[in-house]
Image (cartoon, rainbow, N blue to C red):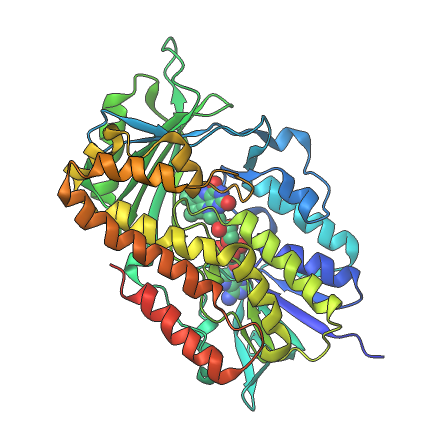
Amino acid sequence: MNRKTIAVIGLGHGGLVAALKLQQRGFAVTIFEQKPRDAVGYPWYDDIRADVFDFCGLPMPPRDCYTDKGKRLFISPDEQNSLRVPSGKPMEEISIDRRALLRHLCALCEDAGVCVRFRTEVDSLVVKQNRVCGVTVDGKALPFDLVIDASGLFSPFRAQVPASFGVQANPRRSDVMVAWRGFFQWTPGTQAPDPDRNIYIKHQGSVGLSWCNLNDRGEVDVFVGRIGGLSPEEKDAAVQALYRNHDFFSDVPLRDGQWGYISLRGPLGMMVADGYCTVGDSAFMTMPMMGSGIEAAMKAGLWLAQHIFEHAVTDFTAANLWGWQVRYYKELGARYAFVDMVKRWVLNIDVDLLNWLFGCGAVTNEDMGLVSTDPDNPYRLTAGKIAQKVAIVLQKPAVIRQTAFRMLRAANAKRTANAIPPTYDRAKIDRWLRRYNDLLKNEA
Ligand SMILES: Cc1cc2nc3c(=O)[nH]c(=O)nc-3n(C[C@H](O)[C@H](O)[C@H](O)COP(=O)(O)OP(=O)(O)OC[C@H]3O[C@@H](n4cnc5c(N)ncnc54)[C@H](O)[C@@H]3O)c2cc1C
């Protein structure tokens, strides 16, 4: 029997996990990565849950490439109050060297026989008779039974999928955080700051976040992210403001700062087409509040492979792949659609009201768990807790006006995402897609 062939575009976390699992099950997988081997990823550390490796049936990466993660402390725009995301167990979440993680996943793939082609840019999808059936590289069409698009947030390939499938083409400006991250020396002799990760919400009145923290390696980690755009001048002003406020932040850079783009929206409405599916940032699989997408991409890659072998899928039609998307929505996507709405509310709310909310007691540290990445967090908003909160915010009618509507919309987004049709009924899917896309589109 001919082995089914699968192309993965981009050496991303989700594509790598799917590639490994599918290769182990007898598929012939090729990964195309445009960058050279040693330039993939970024020279920094990302936060992920440690149990994602166990979850995906993968060995832990080498011990020297991760440390325990500091907890997040959100700071109000006036810097007078803060809210802490509840602590998990030590090593529950880790801070991991991005490049070492990608090397680890890539080595597992290559050992399993996946063909990884570095310095190889995919030009376009090959589409015949309404079906994706390969990729072009250097002007040459290469046939594949399935193409997994893991090429990141600005994937040009979504737009090449036949329009009838409804794979949306591009994120809006308001869906993307433009970010700059730099690492500096710690000023000798200064006191080590709070070990928790300080995150300034609406830093300097912006629609975005900044942080300035000391990491476990003794480096000052500086991040400036703004939704919709960040000019070099705005970035410099924010870095200067952080520099003035933190004694331990020296002006000696350790390496060049990097610019990046983070998806901050609910998941893509349609992730599959005949011969095609998309994982990771190209399917907007990040946590909309934090932009953490590695764990979601890895899980989505695992579920994709599991779906393919549990359902003995050999003809990679949208209908046969749809069950995978449904699983993603049920396990993560619907929750992320909710968080998307909450985030848009937090970032667009009036600064004075946000300052008041940080200090008034209506939002507690435990509530912050609702927007953390932990799917097992047992914290729930009970009727009693909601009543207490309502009693507090009744003091400020403006909060009620700005909050109630947004919270109802957030709940509605989750309900709508959860109502994803369980089977591939195109008429039902199109109706659901319209409702779901409209909800996201109508949010500022
Ligand atoms: C500043 C910043 C901080 C972040 N922090 C965290 C964090 O702490 N925790 C977390 O979980 N996530 C974090 N993220 C998000 C995380 O980076 C992504 O969600 C995750 O990497 C999944 O992305 P991806 O693999 O889908 O895409 P990408 O990482 O964008 O990878 C896509 C790959 O595809 C390749 N490619 C693109 N086009 C082509 C083509 N035509 N041909 C061949 N190859 C191609 C690219 O070169 C790239 O290697 C952060 C992101 C940024 C920018």
